[in-house]
Amino acid sequence: MHTILSRKVINNQITFARYPAFTITELAVSLLISGLIVLAAFNVMDGFSSLAAKTTLQNNIHLEKIQFFKAISEDMGKAKTIKHYDDETIFYLPDEQEISYKIEYDGVVRTIGEVSDTISIVITSWHMIYQNKLPTALEMEVTSETTDIELYRILKRYDNEVLMNLTSLKTE
Image 1 (cartoon, rainbow, N blue to C red):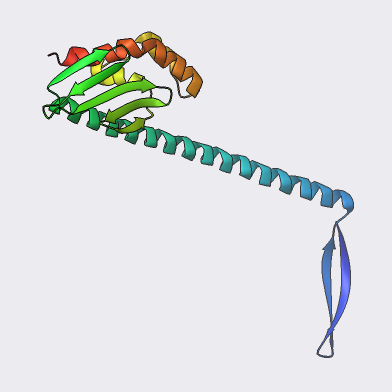
Image 2: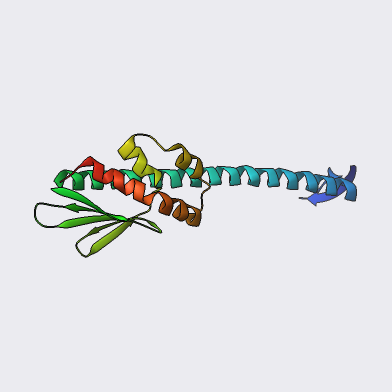
């Protein structure tokens, strides 16, 4: 680094000042170090944002499961009988109303009369609530990295077993 002496005239007074002057190499090294610091900062911020996104997703899934468990518990409490048909379980209420639970590609479809809503939950949730444990094979297959298509294939393999668990809870 070199020093440049400059002269300024302010209000009829002459002042001298020294300013640092960088060589091209010093300037390039300085910019390289600054760039690396900025890149590291972006990587740290990206890590925090992906962690926050993952936490938000997990919280949303958790809330969805709670809503599902609340809905199915209320339906079971009101049901006069519960019947299992292939891949569907139906709760028959005293007022002749039917509530159907069916496993579909995008989750569990709950249908009351003509109105359907889909609850996109991982199939293991059914096992957790009805058996209070996870089957080892299923627990090993379903992870946070499982894609929708993989989950659908796994779900189809286990759907009959899961829906049969519903019928064992309450019989005619």
